Length: 211
Length: 392
Image 1 (cartoon, rainbow over the protein chains, first blue to last red):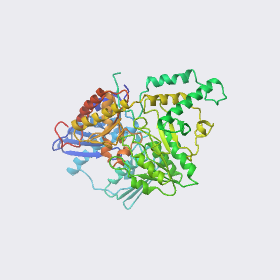
Image 2 (tube, helix red, strand yellow):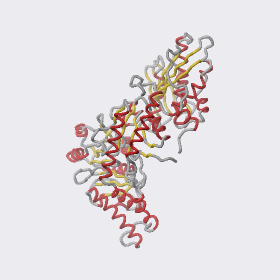
Image 3 (cartoon, helix red, strand yellow):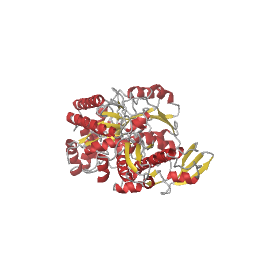
Image 4 (spheres, one colour):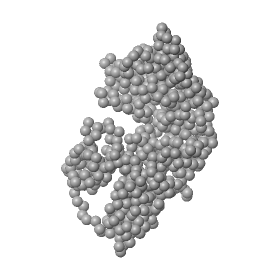
C-alpha cells in the first residue's frame, strides 16, 4: 500500500503519544485555523521551582499531520524548561517526523503554535509577560512567518510571497505576489487574516493579490 | 495487498472486463481513422463502429444521432457547452449566465473563466439539501441570459435537482439549458423527449467505462461555437481524432447497467445511512433523504476531521473521500457542503461513500463497522464534543 506520509508520521498518527486533557493545568491553549479547519489544544503542568514541563497532553481535531505533530512535539517538550520548549520549531518537529508533505506544513505549525500558546498562557497567568507593544510592519512580518506557502511547505515570507505590507490606524494591508485565481489564493488569504486579526490593536486586515 | 474495498465510484470506477473486450478490436484490428464512406475498408469499418456507438447513445436518450458529440469526458463536455454557447451568443443575445453554487468544477470554473472575460454570472443559492429555488431561477433569467447550467445530481451529496421543471422554466423564458448528468446517467432515467435540456454532459468514467471518454448532447440548432479547432470531425463541432475504442467502450458500459444493479446500489446506500445514523452518535446526513442518486451516501461525523478518517480507513483497506479542506488540492473546504449552509466544521468531518458494480453488502457492513471504530478512536483525542455518550 502507498500512503502519503512517512512511516514515522503514520506511527504517531496511529498511536499518538500524550493524548488527552490535564485536569487543572498550569497552562493551556487552543489554536485553530479556520483556513483548514484543524484545531489543537495543549495542556501543560509546570514545576514552579525550575519551570520545567513535568506533564503535557494534547487533543486534536485535525488531520494526520496535525495529530502526528501534536504527538511528537509533546514528546519533545516533556521534561524541558519553558524557555527550551519555546524554542522548539516546526522544522525540528517535521524533521523528527521524517518530513511532511509541503501542503501539510500549516497543520503541523498549528500544533507547534498550540505548545507556544500554552506556554504563553502560563507566563501570562504568572506575570512573566512584558507590556503590549503596538503592531508594526515588523510584528506583521513576524506573524506572516507562521503562514505556510502550501506550494513549498515554507512560510510566505521566506518564499517571497509578501509583496507589500502597510500599517496604519489599526488597518493592515498586505499584498500577495500571486494572482487571485491561484489554486491556494483563498486558503492563504484566510490564514493570513486569522493570524493578523488576532493582534490586539488591529481592526481590519485587507489581503490583496497582484491581479 | 489485502482486499481493497473501493467506495469512491463517483471519482472513478473499475473498468468492466466486458467493456475492455468490446474495445480491444478497435485497438488491434480496426485501428484506422474513421474515414468517409469512400475511404478504405478498415476506415469504413471504424466509421461504422463510431456511428453505431453514437446511435446507441442517441436511442438511449431518445434523441437523434447527430445530436451526440463524443468528447474526452465530462470536463470537456461541460467546458464545450458553457464556453461554446457563451461565445456563440455573446454578440447576439448577451453576456449573462446562471449556474448553481454547488456545480462541479468544470461548470463552476468555466463560469468563473467567463466572468473574467466580462460575462456576468448568477450563482444560484441552494437550500439545506442542495436544491435550487425555482422562483429564484425564474427571477434570475434576464433578456441577456444566454445559458442556465444546473446539474442533474450533485457530485458530493448526490442531491437530484428537478431538471424537468428547470428545463420548462428555461424553455418558457427562451433560454438554453445545460445539465451535467455525469452522476445520474444510466443510474436514473433521463429521457430527452420529456426533459427539454438543450445540452447534456455525459461520461463513461462513472459507470465502469473507460476514463477520459464522454459525450455532449447538443439539441439540433443550438447556437454553439466550436472551440477545439482542427478537422471537421463530430459534425464539425469538435475537432480531433475520434476515440472509437472509447465510444464503443462507452456504449458497452451503458448497456451493462441494469435496473437491478441500480436497485442494489440503492439498498447499499440506504443500509449504510441507516446503520451509520443509528449506531454512531452525532452524525448528519448531507444531501436529501429521497431526492438522491442511488449510489451516493455522504455523512458528517462531527468532532473529527475527514482526512484522519480516510487515512485510518485506507490503512484498513477502504477507499472513501472527504470534503475536508485538508484533503483538497486547494486546501479549501468543500464548496458543496458550504453551499448547503454547512460550516467548516460540517465539511471537516464529511465522508462520501459512492457505490459501484463491484461492491457487496458485506463491504457496506464492514465499512460501517470500521468507520464506527475509527470515529470512536478519533473522538477520544478530539477537544470537541466531550459532552456526549460514554465511549464516543
